[in-house]
Image 1 (cartoon, rainbow, N blue to C red):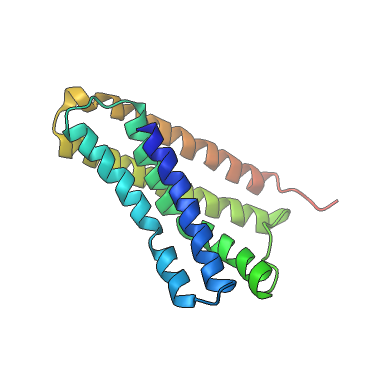
Image 2 (image 1 turned 120 degrees about the horizontal axis):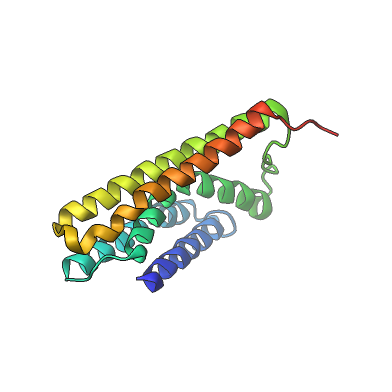
Length: 176
């Protein structure tokens, strides 16, 4: 299962690495767009393999939950990541403007961190929903009990991100 998740992560970057040069260096805008729209397919393969593995009789372990977390974070952060990579590819391959960096100080940085926190919350909600859906689809609480450990894990991830965002709000960094 871990191999599949790693392969999915690599597949994500391979599809992204193929789509952006096709779009900018080769000037094949449609081909690049089609390749970039295939990115969610990687998530579906990982999720489908997880469900198939569990429905085939496997007992859930942390890797099955990791697959749900990978999909959750990929769905939440994927668009932002593609937009970031697209901006850098446009700059380097097509002479576009240099993308804006992450704000470093004050209220702009706090707003940025709250945006990251919102994406993390979305990722956690998707992960928890996927874990619950997989448990329901498999229908065997004894074999899927280990997936329940992902609920507090996602709560911890969101909690840490909330602390970071609150820290940048309450104690904003000042320009030197």
